[in-house]
Image 1 (cartoon, rainbow, N blue to C red):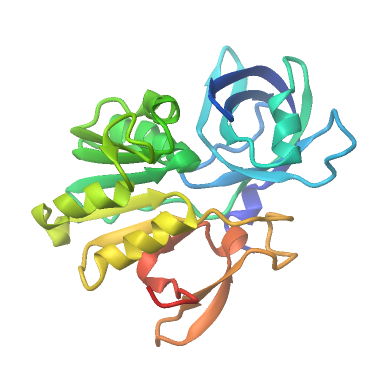
Image 2 (cartoon, rainbow, N blue to C red; image 1 turned 120 degrees about the vertical axis):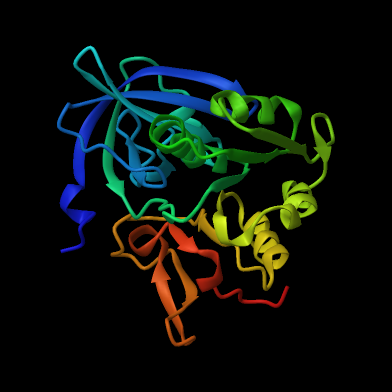
Length: 278
């Protein structure tokens, strides 16, 4: 049995907080039974709305926060309204009922030789990286961290950076130029890439496919370590429906398909095969 699968549970949760953090973005706080397993950064949960019969399928969300306080287990999810299902979730108030399955997938790992961490996030891709920052870097390791956050507007990027505290450097980029660099977040990453030592630096990234492709193109033959968490549509979250497969390379360079939900969502970026040339 997959080691992660041993810890998967399905629990009834209760909404204890739901607030808008930026246009089209909201933060859910969910109370869970104390037996719910603690996730590792990069893992995700499948969330089902039990208050509305329109949404039979669960939706995947990266873990944004997880803590135990006053005997309660609290799960936090930073969500973007992307369709009917997330729109209905955004309307749930305190006391609303949800079903939570997780934690799912494989999270980020840091090579012991690494001396510097680079975080690269696009949109709600900031959620798992924020959790990583809070769980590993700020509490367990003194590694210097530089973060690059990109979003459409200043309102959104301001919300995304709320928990990126204690960093060595924080760079911002917006599509409309209303905050930070005007353009793609990978552009400013590229301007600083050559300044880092390849052997002691590791990049952790999460964002839309366009950002991940641009990152892969930017790295090229650079040997810097890089893990990415993929944002794919998922139906089951446990590898049964084969709806989130991506092309990867095995140890011999042969193409094989992997399920993002079960084999990922975190992959070595150099193991990914892009369907179209850069």
